[in-house]
Amino acid sequence: MSDFYKELAKQLATRWVSMLALPGVLFLAAGWIGFRLGHAHALDLRRFTEATTGVATQIARWPGAAQALGLIGVVLAAALVGLVVQALVGPVRAFCLGQWPRLLATALTGRRRRRWTAVVRRREELQKEHPPHARTPEQQQQIDLIAGRANNIALAEPGRPTWMGDRVHALSQVTVNRYGLDLTFCWPRLWLVLPENTQTEINTAQSGFAAALFTLTWSIPYLVLGAFWWPALLAGLVIAAVGRARARDRIGALAELTEAALDIHGRVLAITLGVSDKSVTGPLDPEEGLRITDIARKGR
Image (cartoon, rainbow, N blue to C red; front, side, top):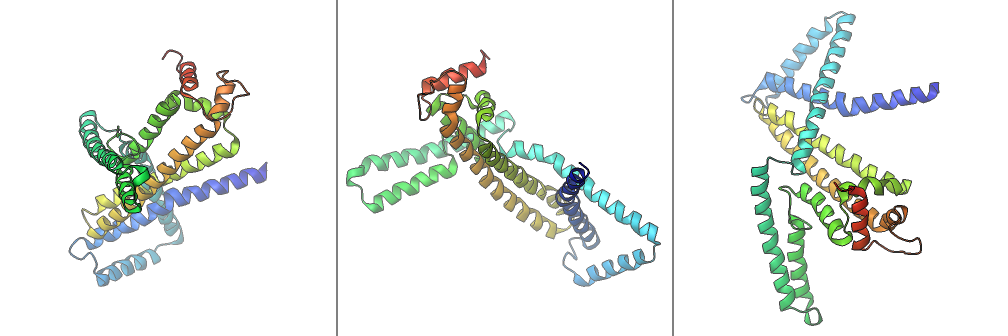
């Protein structure tokens, strides 16, 4: 047990340093440089060298105890910055998933829906103009291009003001339309019958999405610092772009894994709840899905 607790403490310390302290130290360093140089001398290497040399010389004159306390203070300040950023992950997640104020969400969702509908109609027109049996490779390529544009907006009719929100919304729509399942109520029950390896894959995807959101959230303090030192603004924009790209990729992978889990293991849930007989195989049918939803909702 002693070795177990030592290993656990080591892992927690490593995680604490990598997720809170180290990014916080980098931001504190950027903040110190930014306030010393400002906009006017943002890239003045001579001023930077003079400032760092002066601080290093001053710290070198401190007694050892004062240096240790100073180091502890910096680490604690860095951890505090990391905790503040961590607290902002929730609002950033809500923003990315389209949980916006109603009026703004309705307006932007409507705009996305109109764009998606126009592209889908164009694809349908091309499919009618060029039937499959008489379709040339160039015509098929054009149809695929239009279909790709629709998927870039949303994989189903938009119901959220953001792409990531619509990726989750599309998953809910697919499960309702294809299987008759209300995923909000049925997912916890499906989770309990999933094999351990499937749960591990989904947990890994969820962790990846959470890490991407954490990266995206770190752009906020740098964007704020950019008001005083413009290079920080550039850094914030780069961090935001990287975090957003990773978050889109991870939420897409998570949605695909969730849908695949339902395709493969939905029948197990139906058998477990007594909706389907063990002799039946294959994916759920909508009638079975509706019965599972009734059981899960319990009249709610």
